[in-house]
Amino acid sequence: MAQRDGRLSDACAAYCFCPRRQNRVADNDMVELFDIMATMLELGGTKATHTNFARSLVPQLNGNTGNKRSAAFAQGGFNLTEPQAFDEIEPGFYNPKTCLEHEHP
Image (cartoon, rainbow, N blue to C red):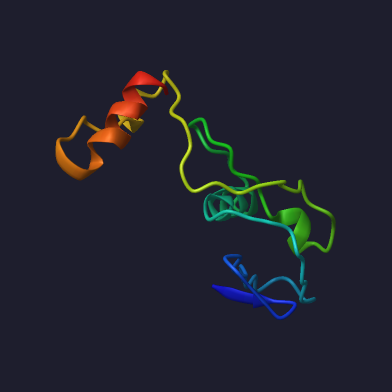
């Protein structure tokens, strides 16, 4: 939990250090962990070869407005063209989650 404007929030700051960047930038955009992947790939001059919804943070690192999110999610659906992403159906505690992935991807 982080504190924002005197209130507790589950928002957490994301920090990125880029040695070639001279200016420090602070931005309040909502980001997700996988956005770091898209950022590193863009800085490296390449692209992901798999389907993903990550957004590069390079615009924010350059002091510009990024592609802002209205929400951040911890778990998403599964792309039917990527069966390797599906968990095996498990008994026990995770059974409802793993069944849901297969029944409603």
